[in-house]
Image (cartoon, rainbow, N blue to C red; front, side):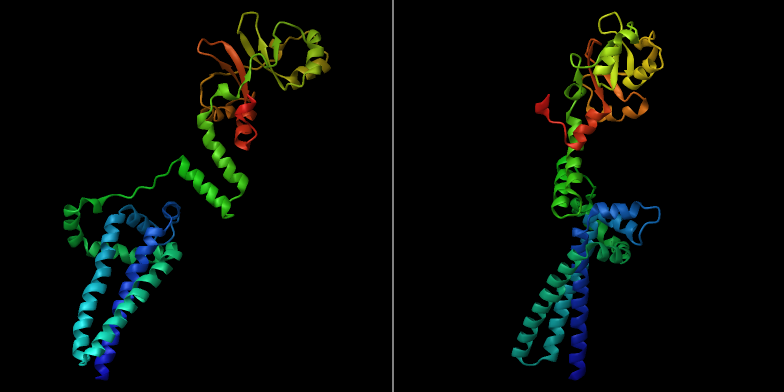
Length: 328
């Protein structure tokens, strides 16, 4: 009798351990951060199990099917076998009833609730450790899985990693609230997405406010204007309407004055400048500023007319949160 009870206890332990492993791994796979898995798998030296875990996550429907079959094999088939053997071991009906109640509670607590809680809390560690074993089970169960996939095509659905602007904003906000990233970093992430909604027209200095110089006038005649105006860059204009000849830096103009080159004109000291349409998006414009030394663009309308001036600092003001639409 003691040997029968010992064998029954061994079977109970096998069912509970098997059920717990399946439940914990399932919870871990469903809660693990897919971006973290992708990061670990994409490294030059991937973390052990990361690539297999990424493949399992990619075909999550098939992976969960394998786990469901294994889990129910322990819970259903194992419980039936235990019930049959318990009938042989326990002759009294009350003993069989107490065994059934005790087994049900053990399966719920130790086979489902506790392992799922642990799997969810240690999702990455559990997923990485279990990935090779789970991959092997998927290969062994393929003759059973393939017919099921033909009957239930939803199982074959691939789990792609996707996101959008609003989701990233929410993640940044939650990260800031949890203290995982700084508040100013979260704010800047939100400002980055604002660049896609703004154009050069929104941020430019209008023509009427842009500092301009007549390209044909000598520095001697411009002395007072250069000394009293602190603008760092000047748009050099020609005689024709909307004729922009280039950009002259204040530092270079003042240096020429101090060196006595008073008969030079802004045309002699200006640099070539690029033109951008007023409706160009600011996120596209930002990538262009590192291609030249002036750090500015002349904004033109659809007819090629000079309508404003925009510099890299205007875009950076948006990222820093200094720019407000009401200020325009």
